[in-house]
Each structure stands twice: as structure tokens, then as C-alpha cells.
Image 1 (cartoon, each protein chain N blue to C red):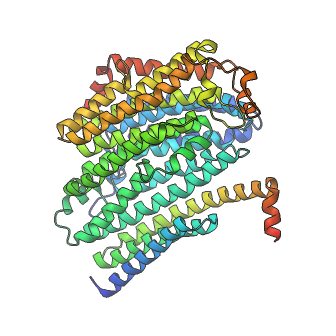
Image 2: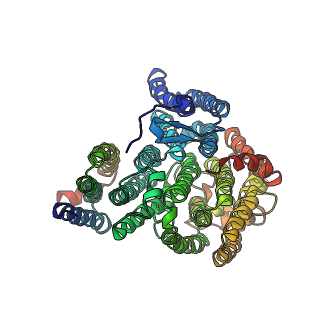
Length: 492
Length: 101
């Protein structure tokens, strides 16, 4: 391959290094602080995340720096994804101890697994070679399989862990098999090398087979229909903070690397993958929306909405132009803020028996908890893409990138889907503001479930996370330039 | 392409398809899990066959790396399956009766 194995600028590995070290220390501290150390572990983790964030800002790679012979290349794009992941991790850490205590779970390896998964997410956008990419995806997925099934006393959670594991491993096998064919026909796994040798590849059929298998693997990981069936079950069953972490973090990291693989490695085959992604985008947007329309559970609703948002993001992948890079990143950051905030509130209102909130539970929430209800309204508006929220700017940027690449028909479908999605997001808001709280005497025998509706005040950790997310959404919605100036630095 | 490479690729395709069918069609977690292992090993076989075809050793090294990845997956997967099974056996009395026949 002729790549001299230079270690390169090790300092760019510092933020990831801090996170990995913190994961190892958390395992140790869990033993030392045996027992109820939830809060202390989370606080230690929070300090580590802040240190890693500062390291990431201090060593912000203005010029790309290569590590490990070029298998990892840290640039502005990777740094912004890493900072987003760190922010999501910090918000998850704030919510977790309170939620774990309410669900009667021990801390233990929970925090270490979160950190290991985050380290995979931070490395993923820097990876420049298919083996490294697949290993980083495994690094972020394996801890999440365990975390999804962490609440072992709930049948939902056990099932979520198992389903996530099975379909995640299934997807990885597709990716590895696809990588084998791409390697066999081009003789290299480096994204740059693949792009160079694609035009002269001798065996077109095997190459396209490899491309197809790789795309199927990525479609599973990013939850594109028809490979989305695991998402609602996994999102519903996982502990709520974990759902937030995985909805935001996995989407950010995997979409970032997907964009990079397509734009840097597979551009010569664009006519083929654009066709495939075009079909996937339409199916994903329409199916996600249709299935979300009648969901009663807020977590399932958010799961289907995450499928729909993945469909919108594919617009950026298809466009694959300079605008698309910053648009996809902006959209992912806006989406992360909304989804982490909503799931913090779900965690706050969840009952111990289901770890979920039903829309009927939200009735009259505006009177009982006005602040939290207002926050959830903002999240829903941002997910719709309502003006003055970050979701609006994200959609405008993304749709503009698709428009500029000339995908008008796809754009029209996306806009129609956005309008359809207003219905189910506003159903949540309507339940909170306009429907009266149910009277216990109206309920029959099956009302026992609803009688257990959460009434407790929202504790400060949940509210803090919700407020941070709301502020992010409004700031990005009103002054998007603050982030866009950064994002303009990260064209590849 | 040498015949041995072509045969190996056909074999790997057959193994991969069998793995996919096992995951999609069977309902026993262990069998589904075996299907995934079959898929991963089919990919490794393809890497090794291409290694011969391209006359590069990289493919064999990559196969070794993915064996390690598969081992990590086995560790996690079996742990999850065992934890589910343990719960079932404790909680679901009907399942225990069924097993007794």
C-alpha cells in the first residue's frame, strides 16, 4: 500500500484519549466507591467530558492532522462532530443519575459504557479507511447494545437490548462483506485510494455488489426504511437517557461518516448510489411519517420521527455538494438538541413500570408544569422546522443544498412530508395545552394504568438539560451565523 | 480470476446467504446468532480469497482483525442472550413447564 506508518500528531488524539481514560477510570472508581455512587461517577464523568471538550477546543485542527499513518485524519469536520458528541454525553450524564435512582438501577458499568460508546463516535468522523470505519462503528455500537438492555427488570428493555444487538450485528456483517468486495475490486480500503481506482476497476458487477452491501449496512445503522424495523422497539425499550444519547449521538456520528464515505470514497459511482439513496429517502420520509401519525407513546413517536429525520438527512447525502456538508452538520446539531431535550423530559415523566410517557399522560401538563411543557413545545416546534427554531434553519439549509443539486421532485416530497409531520408533533402540544386532565372517575377498569400518570414535579437535572436544549435551539434559530461560521471551516 | 478464487467467492456467497436466511427465518436467538457468525465468516473468506487474487497479504490481516471484532460481538451477544434466558427461567413459569415437556 506504500503508506509509511507515521504515528503523526498524537495531540489530536488527546480529546478521545481523555474520554477512553475516563471510561477505564470509571470502571475502577465504581469498584472503589462500591454501592450508591451514581452521582459521584456522573460528576467525575462530567469533569472528564469538560476536560476533553477544552482539549478539543484548544487543539482545534485548523489544518488537518494525520494520525496512525493517515487512518485517522482530524479536521474541522471531525472536531465539530466530536464536540457535538461531547455535549450530548454531558447532557446525558446530567440526566442519568436521577433517572437511574428512580428506576432502581445501580450505576456501575453504565457510565463506563457511555464513555466507550462516545469515544467511538468521536473517532468515527476522523476515520479514513473502511476497516477503521467499521471498527469505530463497532466501538460505538457494542456498548450501546448493553446500555439498551440495561434496565434488566423490564421486559421491554431486555428485548430492546437483544433486538438492537441482533440487527446491529446483522448490519455490521453486511458492511464487512461489502468492504470485502470493494477491497477485492479496487485493491485498497483507503477512501482516497478507492476514489482513484474506481474508474479503472475491472470487475464492475462485484464492485456494485460491494457498494450495495455497504449501503445496506449503513442504511441499517442510520435507520433508513425499509431497514428501520428495529428503531421503535429499541427506542421505546431502552432507558430514556440512553435513548436520547443514542438517538442523537449515533445519528451525528454515523451520518457524518456516511457523508464522508460517499463524498470522498464513492463519488465516481455517484450515479448508482444516488439512485439507491433517492428511493430510500422517499420510502423513509413517507413511511416514518405515516407510522408516526397514530403513536400513543411519546418515545415511539420520537423513534418514528427520528426515521423521518434520517430521510430528510439523506437529501443532504444525495446532494453531496459543499453546501450539503455544513447543512447536514447543522441539521444534526439542531436535531440532537431537540431530541436529547425531549428525552430528558420523557425521563422526568416516565413511570417506573414502563420507562415511557403516553400522550394521554401529557394532558393538562401545561397547568401542572408550565416550564417543562413550554420546553417540550419548543422541541416539537424545532422538530417540525418552525421559524425561530434551529430546526427551521437546518431544514432550510438542507433543502437549499438539495435544490442546488437539482433534486426538485425529492424536495417537494420532503416539504409535503414536513407538513404532514406537523400533525403528530402538534398532537403532543395540543394534549399539553388544550386537553383537560383526565378525571379519575371517568376511567373504567383499564384506567388503572392512566391513574399511575406521573404527577411529580420535574427534578432539576431534567429541567437543566431541557433548558440548555431550548437555549441551544433558540440561539441557533435566531443567530445561525454563530455556528455556520464554524461549519464553513469543515468542507473536506 | 483463478478458479480457486472464484470457487471461494461462490462458497462465501452461499455461506452469507445461509446466514441471512438463518437470521430472517429462524426465531431461536442462538440460531439467529449463529447466522450472524456465518455472515461474518463469509466476509472473512471473501477477504482471504481476494487476498490471493490481488496477491496482497492485507486481506489475511484484515480477516484476523475482523475475527477479533466477531469475538467481541460474541461476548456481548451471548451475555445479552444469557441475561434474557435467566430472567425467563425465573419469571415465566409457563416457559419452564414447556421445557419439561
